[in-house]
Length: 332
Length: 308
Image (cartoon, rainbow over all chains, first blue to last red; front, top):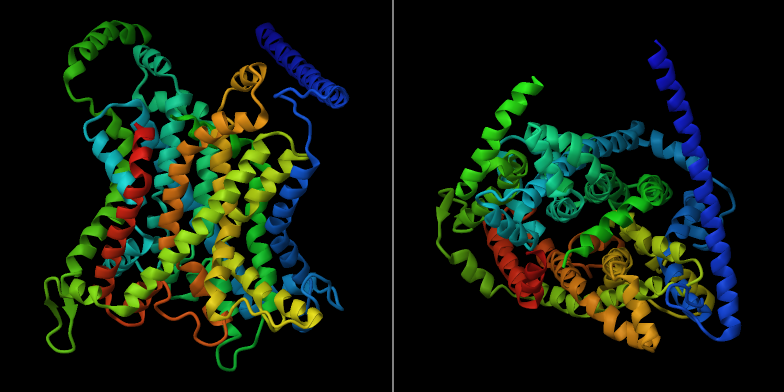
């Protein structure tokens, strides 16, 4: 009883200490920033700049700002035009607002148009991403770990085949994949979308490089000496060490699956199984079919809804994918 | 339990040492799921594609073995070679521009001389998160001469610019691709730059190296390694050009984007609307061989070195 109480006490203490440490760290960061700013000012006066803390260049910032505008203005265009009615879209200036602010109406219409099929597409996309990209990440983690930490027979062959497969054009695969899946009765089912999404050579490469660096072989040896099975070692020791690499790989497989256009285009004929990308394209094409009603406002609002989750994911997970990729680039 | 483990341990360790020259199959415990799916979605389809490329569907008598007939037909197929020429031109122009922009941005961001480094890093990369469908839709609307930005520009200045006319259409598509992938390539360059130890810069500056000398002698050689990867991925990507032109197809007036605009579009239309999947398979294989040959010729070897 007393042991449990003291354990709880130490836990509370620990938490307090952790908090204090974090506060101290924040203050330290602030101090560093202050010092750096002061030093920049000093060096500007003295005409001396050091490498770690060079003078800021306004000219370079302006040049890069031009490029940043190029990168960001399509997002602005999308956001502005999502607030317009179809009539305003065709009649008013592209980077100015329309006569009526119709963003909410547009969002409601996107989700109710054609009996709310957009919601169905969204759910489909989520299923493909969770199962397809999730599975791809898992396979890449295990495969990359195997390539990095074991010298098994056929390892070199696996390496050669995967290098080769990166350069095979998607179409060379897609046509026979389609014919094969059609023979197996898998076309027009979610499996036709999910199974090919499970393979990510780039993810495998990333996890391979990452495992090599992040998991010390001595640690694995120690676990084996203690009698842990290979899978136990993998789950309890390696996986936590691989976390930043896993987030990076997951992000890239999620983007690949979420944004995939070609695969669903050939595999799926039934609109009920479409992901967002194919659905949006179908809505866009509606304007050019005979008697079709132009619904560009819905296409644009739908596009905005499609990209928001990924943009948020990238913004929130910045720290992870940058460190993960940097590790991938260390390999010489 | 624990004591049993300890008791068994020395024997096990001994075994490992004895078996050092014997095959160690443990890696396959982790490799097999990837390998199985890979065989199913990569190897079997490729083998199957090679197999069906030797056959031909006929009106009468079903499918017939024709040997290399599909390949010899491909050799003299004007539409096929015009599409190959188009993507080759696209690659030669678009890839260098994009990689130059990406490397310049990476160097600028890495130099720490910008106000708001973080903002530039994320804003350059953000387009990568946008699906090709959406980016093509946005740019397609922007390009539109009727109610797009180009149209507004023409109204305002009284000009008659049309970026979707056949002569500049390829450049318009190139712009979409540049927008989509510069950030991705920038990030690869930037990651490799960020691995240079800072002590190296300090040493260089103590030795009196100018900033330009540091860029030339330290940073550019470092970029070379990642250049191999970006060049190969970009070449493969642009030889497979499909999404952007096929989505633009009916946003472009007239028939500027034909069904054989790129090799991928040609193969797609042959097998899904032309019902000639055998011929399309032959086309796909030839394209795969061409792409691989170019990728190897350019830099796959240096990449292999890197991955050893």
